[in-house]
Length: 202
Image (tube, rainbow, N blue to C red; front, side):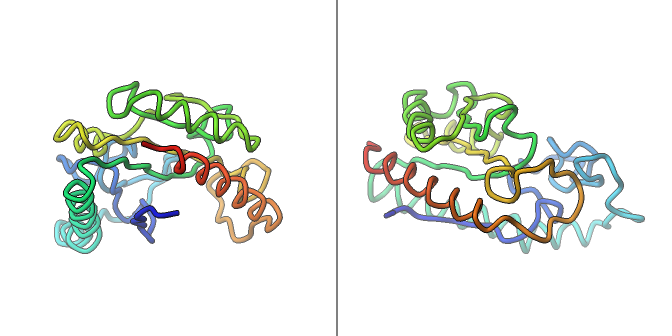
């Protein structure tokens, strides 16, 4: 689709790329901690917390390489086009509220609301229900990029598990299978919505 994609291929339980590094690096609150000590359901992840060396290893091998690459790509695009639009893709079960998809621009803080509303319309035309800034608005990392340069606009995209894995309640169990018909249907719908949106994105 003539876009640049940067993908993390490991769990946020290793290290959360959407967190700004602040002390303490390991914490119970998954909304704030760079490395979680508990699952999002409040269960302990470790019998013994990772030591300082392990924390530094994760930052060195996963966190910094991702953000260094992201910054490199942003700089290239700014030099080439003068502006950048980042769509930060996520999925979850409760992160979309009562909708299929949640879009966020930090309550109009990191992207023009018209960009978000246009994408909402594209997604609704292929059959999704879409909320804006509820319950998710966008992480501090994205806000930092926009605050450093207003030519960098950012939007988060949260897709509910029910829309591409299985249409059921999904909790903390290991999900080992998925509904291939649902997955492929969602893939085609999202492709159509993205193509329409990107075609008219300025």
